[in-house]
Structures are given as structure tokens and as C-alpha cells.
Image 1 (cartoon, rainbow, N blue to C red):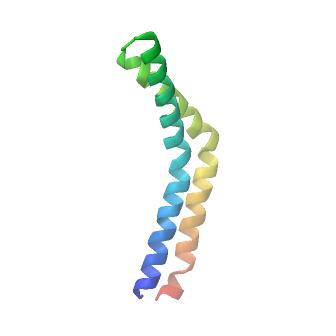
Image 2 (tube, rainbow, N blue to C red; image 1 turned 45 degrees about the vertical axis):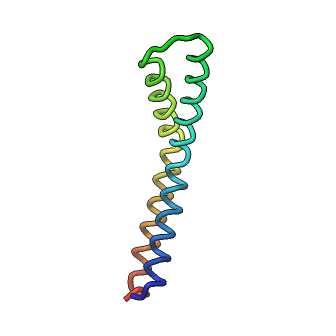
Image 3 (cartoon, rainbow, N blue to C red; image 1 turned 90 degrees about the vertical axis):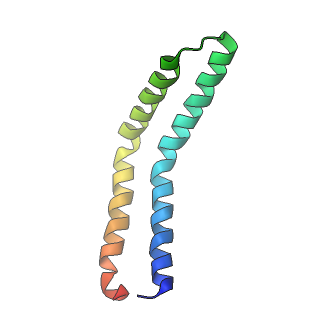
Length: 88
């Protein structure tokens, strides 16, 4: 196995991780910005006000897109496993 193959596998793994993690991260960031804006407008500085909505939103995103995330991870894993003979 040469360096090009390793770089290809790592690049593919990084893109898959970015695709799978993006919905969760973007949702947490969006809710965090909205809650931060709300807290600065109302001057309510409660810790749980920032945590609970983020927790609920991320949970909903996982429920809604969890099947797609799992299919992406399965497809990546299947692709890597099926290419093992080519790598050797």
C-alpha cells in the first residue's frame, strides 16, 4: 500500500465525517447563536437556557437525520472493506 492510497482513504474518511457531523454541528451553532442573541436582548444570563434548547435541537436532528448518517457510514465502511484486495 503506497502513500496515495492512504491519503485517499484518509481524505474519504474526513469528508464522510464532515458530511455526517455537519447537521449536528450546524444545528448546535445556529441554536447557540439564537439563544445568545436572545440572552443579550433580554439580559437573562441563565446557564440552562443555553443548554436545554441546544440539547433538544441536536436530539431532534439526530432523530430526523440519523438514518441518513448511518447509511453514509455504512457505505463508507463497505467501500473501504471491498477495496481491501486492491490495497494489498
